[in-house]
Each structure stands twice: as C-alpha cells, then as structure tokens.
Length: 368
Ligand code: PLP
Image (cartoon, rainbow, N blue to C red; front, side, top):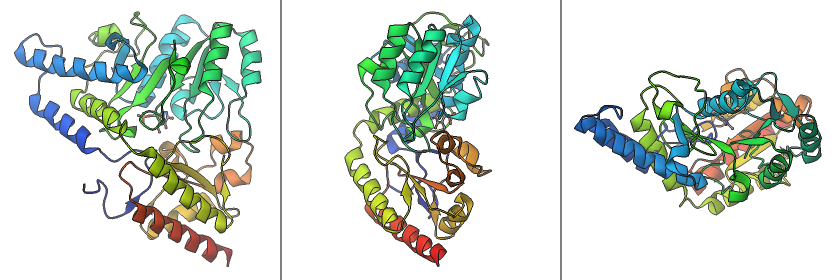
C-alpha cells in the first residue's frame, strides 16, 4: 500500500500511526452513510447500527459489554473523563505514575506522584505505602510509555489496587493494538484508547469503564453516550478506530521488534545509550541517547536526511524541552539528548536499515 506520508521515511508512530487501509475503508463507508445516530428516522437508525457495531468491537478489547464503552474525541479526553468522573467529581484522590503522559498529568495537577525506578518501572512498594494513606484513591498508570516504550507491571499494580480498595485507570493509548493486556490486569479498571494511535483517523477515542453505571460527564450536552459524553459522536472516526483496532490484532509485531533490535544494536555500535534496554518495551519503540548532542540537533540532522523521528511525545516535540519521563528515571542533562524512534505498522526493512545507517553516519560525524 502507498505510504500515507510524503516521501520522507516516517518513524514516529507513537505520535500518530499512518492510516490503515481497513480504517480508511470503514471511515469512508460511514462518511457516505451519513446520518446522526441520535435521529429516530431510517438514516439515523442506520448510523446508530454502525455506531453500536463499533462499540461492541472496541469493548471486546477488554472483554466488556458494549455499554461499558464511551466514545470520546481521543486519548486526552478519555483520560480526562476518567480522572474527572472516577476521581475529582466524587471526591476521590488521584495518584499518577511519574512518567504519565500530559493527558493525565494536566488533568490531575494536584495528584500524588508515584515514582519510577531507573528503568521507568513504577515503584510498587511506594505505591503500596501511598495507598495505605489514601486507600480509596484513583490510581492512573500507563500500560506503556509513549517516549520509552516501557511496559508497566500492570498485573502487580492491579493486585495492589484491589488489595487496598483503590480504583485503577489504565492509559492504554500506546499499548492497544501492539501488546496484549491480561484480563487480570484489566479487571475492574477503566481504560483509555485513542483511534489515531492504532492506525485510525484522528478524532476518536474511547473510555472503557468497569461497568455501565452513570457518571458525571465532562460534556453533558445532549446526553449522548447514555449521558456520559454529550455531543454527536464522530461516527466516521469511530468506525475507523474500530477497524484499526481489529486490523492491529493480526500485525506481525515480532518482526517489527526484531527490526527495532537491529537498529538498537547499530546505535550501540556508535556508542548511543539505550534507554530501558533491559525491561519489556513496546515492540516498535526505541529511545536513544547520544551523549553530548542535543535532541534538537539530532532531529534536524535526521530531518535533513529525510527521517521523521521525535525527541519525545508529539505534544512536546514542537518545543523540544527536556523529557519529564527521562528526568523521572534519573537522567539529567541526557534527558535533553534523547531521540525516540517508533516504527509504524507499515514500516519496511529497507527503511529501518536506511535509518540505522543514517544514525550511524550522524553519530560518527558529530563525534569528529
Ligand atoms: N496517552 C498517551 C500515553 C499518549 O501517548 C497520548 C498521545 O500521545 C495520549 C494519551 C493522548 O492521546 P490523543 O492524542 O488521542 O489525545
């Protein structure tokens, strides 16, 4: 299939995945179908049927009934709705991991911060102690980090939350479609998803709730989504998200992980430091530090060679400030010298090899 991005080699999937053909097809079908799912006439009912099919498909991600799925505009809204509805609006204190995405950090500025170790893994003993003080807290932990790919020990986190009587919210925006989360980890948790990180179009996300209970919406509006999220649902984007989620289940992630490891080896050969090399990471993600060289310089040099990579999360890459994720892991000036490579679903071996060679050329030139 033709690449969705210009002639540049796109290795920034964690910012957004290229649109999958299945998602394009489903999106176009919904655009052509038209109608508002809230309308009672035939066209509205047809749109409603598509929406409810998509809901069943997305809810299956966590083996939940369709009523547990609330469609949102994306991951940020899903995280914010969880923190509002399951935390602040009912007076529940919020604890978040130190490396959470800004979607969570900015929604809970007063939250207690659970530290991570030097590999980016949340400190379980500290979580346990914090929950002794606030046992009924809402605990927000990301399944996988967007900058480093580090996967959380979610089953352990979930067990501690259950033991202490806390609620768990999982930001699965980066892991969904790329990594299986166990039922043990997800049981009783709320889960945030984002369509464009799966290879769907931008503009749709979902919050999977533990049950179908009413909650205090962020957007009351016209009472759509069973009163839990007002506003006309973005049906084309939602259909695209559901199709992308399904398509991602058949992706050969082992092959992508192998290519990622090849780049990692070649980067090590030119003395790059690999972030969190010894823990489980997303199969497509690699975070490299080139000591003494700013992220911005690396980004510009690789951009000139035709490679799209990132210094961290998409939201912060416009300003290229030192990463809070790496700082939380104990990096100091090196937190401003990192590069994130995130391989998209449609990457080719030739592209990966071309990048590894360009990275090595850059590192050798800068060393001179
Ligand atoms: N959570 C994580 C871990 C992310 O990486 C992102 C986006 O980068 C978000 C939430 C926000 O998702 P969205 O862009 O759909 O609002």
